[in-house]
Length: 274
Image 1: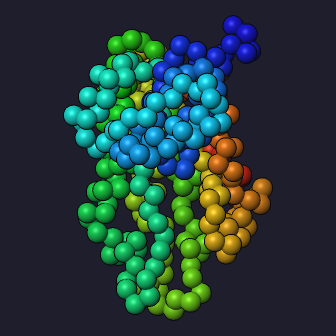
Image 2: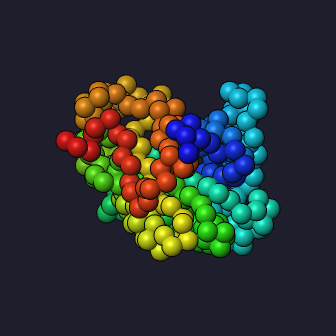
Image 3: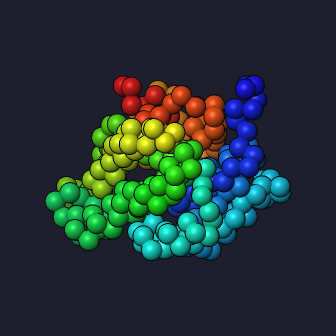
């Protein structure tokens, strides 16, 4: 097998959950560039269609299709699986991006002391249970075929804890009102790494490879103060560009990583090594 051919995904199909988010179109573009047929799945079909259009605007020949998918609904997942057929690649990317905000005079709902059970269950349902359900349905079909790749999108916060100092606001004096990154995010991302390791050994005999990719913070027009404080924690001195994870996705989803499974690849500009 030549060095070029190990990245070839012609004839292979992939599905990306939460594809209407920030990185979903980037993952899709990465796989489509190697020849894969990519299903961009999202609970919001309009967002999935916009993401597919974004990929096509970059590569008119990209074989991408939008589809509605609720990762919390096992019946819907099975219905989508019947429609798309047996996959070669599943990227569990769906998540609720908990916004770190604060309303003066109101105890911040993201803080651990007051985080509601409903919010906990909602975010874990999408980010962790959803990945389990999709892996169960799509991965089981891969196992019967004895070939496939599952890639779980985690975070640098799968290996480190949030540094809450970067979210602090100088105009808020009451500690109970200070915004924080909620506990759900860390639990979900750590849990995805655990799911990765479990499935990697569970389906190893069926030649299913399961890995995780843990991106660092991606620049998306955040406020200058936040960007400055986060950049100070990163040895490379900046946040990631949204397209900087494409090559890693191509490596992890292709035969170029044929002897890698159960691993968590952390790409965070060096933040987690400090």
